[in-house]
Image 1 (spheres, one colour):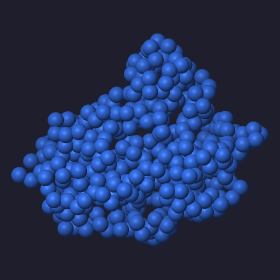
Image 2 (cartoon, rainbow, N blue to C red):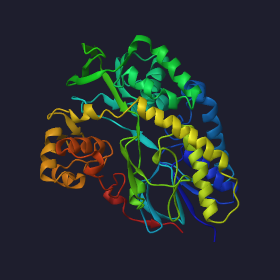
Image 3 (cartoon, rainbow, N blue to C red):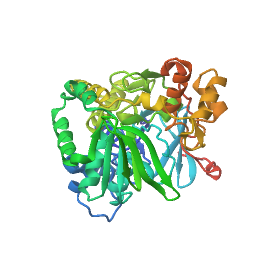
Image 4 (tube, rainbow, N blue to C red):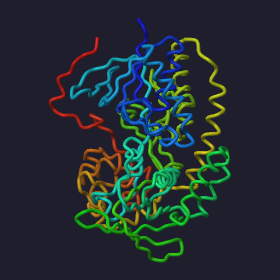
Amino acid sequence: MTTRVLIVGAGPAGIRAAQTLCTAGLRPTIVDEGARAGGQIYRRQPEGFTRPLEVLYGSEAAKARALHETFDRLVASDEVDYVSRTSVVSLAAGQAQVLQDGKIRLVPFDRLVLATGAMDRVAPVAGWQSAGVYTLGAAQIALKAQGVALGAQIVLAGSGPLLTLVAWQLHKAGAKLAAVLDTSSLGTQMRGLPDMMARPGLVWRGARMRVGLGRLYHAGAQLERIETDAGGPVAFHWRDARGRAQSTSCDTVGLGWHLQAETHLADLAGIPFDYSTQWAQWLPHVDPMGRAGEGQYLAGDGVRILGADGAEIAGRLAATACLQDLNLPTLSPHKDMQARVRMERFAQGLSRAFPWPAKLVRATSDDTMICRCEGITAADLRVGSALGENEANRVKSLARVGMGRCQGRYCQLIGAELIAAKSGMSVEGAGRLRAQAPARPVPIGAYQIENDP
């Protein structure tokens, strides 16, 4: 019987993993939540849209085109079983529960490659629960997939390459940017530069974008609150690098502090985790090739935030590890392993230049919302922390943080910082919220399970 390989995710990592497996004669099944393959970074427009790739992806257009064409060829030649608009909601005993067309069905597998990508990492700012406040990723999706700017007067705030990229993309598309507020100071950013020069082309590209933003960009900003009315944001109150109070009128806000790995399915698969002080988040434990356990492989930003190029490399490495374990012929991974070292050095520089704003989070006022799904304030969590012996899952059961629709994806890191600050322990000591199935909200009526042959 042919080995059944399930790949979750059709971004750069998933596509390169599929291509590598197909080269060895396997026919993997690829389950993807997107309507079309490409992932977030190379998100494709709906059929019928005609904006050129150079407008959508800028300098990355050639890479996007190559990746899309590779995957389209695999699908056209029936070398892969591609299942789009479908979510994996649970994993157990060699089977994946997938939600497709409103129904749950079981997909068996012998080998599993998780290429789940990353998501926005956010920090709480008073007023961020208002309508009209989005993540940077949401603003980018609207622009890429629909050609829409989510507002007439936009303030972007946070830190990391995505902040500059989304600001530049909106600015180039003609959107009205009121301000770009980076919580990382120029001095902090410079400390990460030596390692970031492992990829000088990206550094200079980012610098050119920064220059193009001109006086819209402010480094070392101190964020205070988003002023809102019944219609959404009306002003963003902040202080500049010199501590001077500023108020910027706006009708839309985008927030984001780099990215965090999407690890829910990895947790459900029983993969162990380590706390990364570099990235201030829990990450799956894998070997250099992406092995995470018997028959389990991880690739891309779902295990390490290395960007699109790094994700392609990780996808090939994970698939190569799978082929090695199956005693199937494969090319040497040496070149990709060397390239990954360079990617990791660049990532270390990014983490130093654009750190997670722990001080901002720990200073969150009691009345600020931290769990938008459940309407939980910082005061609620601090009370729960005292009663829950400062352990994340006990605090969750008492304060309901992480029990909402996102299952802690947005509030877990915030909650851990507040627990650590309240107790005087490390963030790692506060623990990690355990993932629960289903990984996505599922209608009750969907559980009329159909088995795949």
